[in-house]
Image (tube, rainbow, N blue to C red; front, side, top):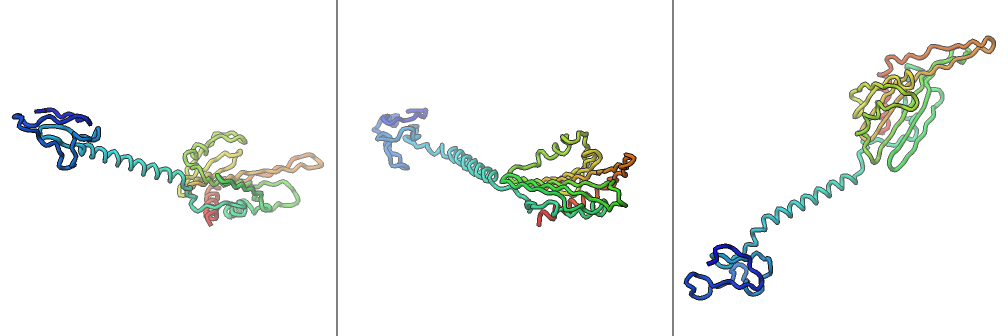
Length: 267
């Protein structure tokens, strides 16, 4: 009797069965109908044991099914991840701005610092990856007398619509990054209930204020600075310099006008 299980090759023949040696035992497998001594495939899992020929290939099936299930799950996850990577980002309804000066009404700032002088200057740059729009406009109160000396508020707007990459991971770091125009240790103060994240900065371009907003794929910036223009007396050469504008308490006006602009850019 063979007590240990042994693999059977193509040419191997089963030994005589029974301890008494009384005739050969049938080697047919009633489940498969195949004779293991007459051409069973190599590695089929057919073995000889105490009970004769037995097919144990079923022992591999649970492991194979588990392995196949893992591969299928991996393939499904990979297909989903690829589809997500190819999907267009959610722009939250924001459109391109053809004229940012026209889109930005600046009603609150105009009430505080004066009406717009002319229409302002705007530019737009539309690309497959990102759209840029900028606006520069001055808010000026009527001059008194014939003097050209004046003080007014300069407003600069910037709108960036990212259509490929997500600006969120770098937004916080960019808020307090140094500027090439005016190097200052900017201090950012968080503004709640405005976009995804928003910050107010002081000391921009000297004594100016800046409001920076991130809303999904969109970045917006509103900068207000005070400008003073003096006048020289042609006879005496004496310079007349008016008082600068007061930017104290400007934050609510900036936030209100930014909120209106964001709503307009979604129409």
